[in-house]
Length: 109
Length: 115
Image (cartoon, rainbow over all chains, first blue to last red; front, side, top):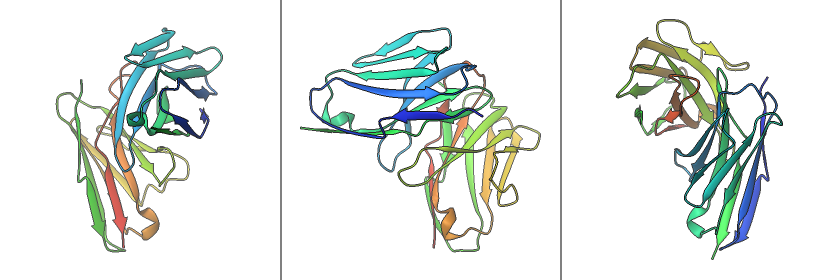
């Protein structure tokens, strides 16, 4: 059974810091891995999609890497801003889409 | 990208009543959809996989008689919470799953409150 874990569970940092969020999964036979952002009481916003054959994807200040063989992905956020405050979720796709436990991020001015 | 429309966005119902949540694909044929539930400050838990024209596949611990899933067409999947109780209050969200190697698109979610 696929299990997806995210570390840390919560993170509070001052504005401007570079951040690394971690996602690990137990079954490496995945099609892809997707990172999402969720604001309180809201739905999901897709941030980045990494196919199983890819090593990383970048969008603006966000960079996601994937090491499928070791079952790990990281989301790097450069120069964090208060507007980045949200819960970040990773999800791995096999025949199902399984979500990680989430990281609650707070960036304070 | 694919658009998934979920309705209603929120609903309040009395204990013992049933609530239907619709998830509609607007520009593609969704043979498979995933239904998730999210309790406060928790992640999304997969409840079931909805398959067009056949029975849904439920995850372990999810009562199929309580959470009825119907996927009668390629554009519509519904989740009905039957005889709802306060502990069913949660955020329910659907996702299309057209192909394994593509980006997953989600509905806007439904916040259910049972009083």
